[in-house]
Image (tube, rainbow, N blue to C red; front, side, top):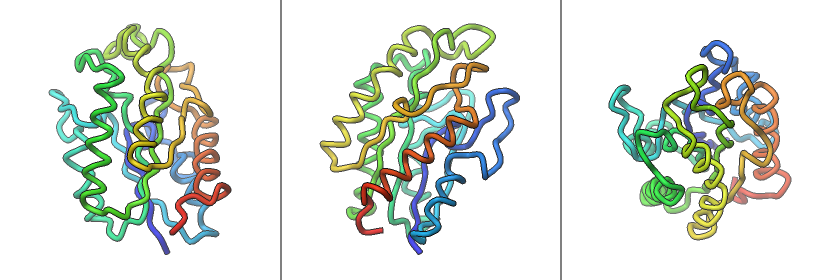
Length: 212
């Protein structure tokens, strides 16, 4: 049995856009992916946290800086053979004033940290879904602004370059899923299913994660 850690934010946690609760395991993309990979004897370890960033500290919620937790989680769930990394949406919040390049630097730091811990770790870097238009309005999530939406739409190109530089597999979640119309930010059930299928195709059908 091989183990793959899925490290992400609320869209890995399975945050429900309608009421803020959590989708059940069989609806979350991580849970669906786990079922699809049973035949390959690959076990999915879920590590999604609402509000998680790459390297930014959240002044209001402790423990959201991904860099502080990635290696400890790789250790606590050891042995980990593969990593699916999908962060960046929360880095787009207005308070951080981060450009696409700045968010990319945070992603690079995470990759370097993981590879320093385990040079043989297979990494699939996933750029997040786009933030929906008008997500910054009061009825949705005013932690974002109009610039946040623009930056989120530029992350695909930034992450794709990073994946090539660091020899990671790459998938753009925005190519297969969109945010719910309910909150303009989180995956709905259809989005979770589509993302799970896309990641499965990268790992299984394209014979990636070659050593797993």
